[in-house]
Image (cartoon, rainbow over all chains, first blue to last red; front, side):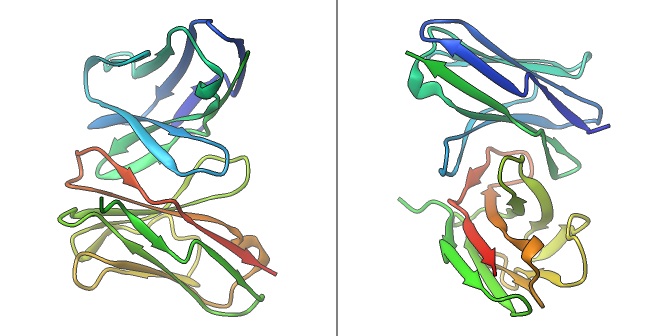
Length: 107
Length: 113
C-alpha cells in the first residue's frame, strides 16, 4: 500500500464545476503540500499545510490531521486549471509523493 | 529572479555512458531534494540533502546513482553506466528548511538510447 494515496486518479469536469481532489496518508507528517504540474511543465507549489485550511484565489486546501486526510478544492473551474495535481507529505524531512490526479476541465 | 536552476534541460546519452545532472538551488536554501519522474507517474524520491550531508538517500535505486552537495548549495546527481530504464525527468527542489515551502526546478529530461 502506498503511503500517500490520491483520488480520483483522473477527473474530467465541465467549466464552472466545483472540483475536489482527495489525499490520504498513512505516515506521521510535519506538513502536506499540494503541487500543480502542467503538461511538459515544471512543478509549482500551491499550498503547504500543517493544520486547518488555506485559500488562494479559487483554490482551497484543507487538512484533517487526526484522519490523515487532505482535500484540494477548485471553485468555478476553468480549462486553464487542467493539470496534474500532486499531494506530497513531509515525513522526517523526506517528501513522499502521491501518484497525482490528472484534471481536465472542458470548456 | 533566481529560482531553482537545473542543467542541462535535456540530455541524450548512450547506454553505458556516465552523466551528471546539476541543480542550483535558491540561495540560502539548506534542504535540497532529487526526484525522478517517468511518463505518467508521480515523482519518485531519490535523495534529500540537509546542508552538505545526505539526510536520506534511501531512494537511490542502486549504486550506479550517486549525489553530492559539497558546499551545501549546488548539487550534482551522477549516474554511472546508464541504462535505458534510467530515462526520466530528473527533478530538483529546494526549501529554506525541512518544513518550509518547496521550490522546484524545471527538471532535466534524460534519455538513454
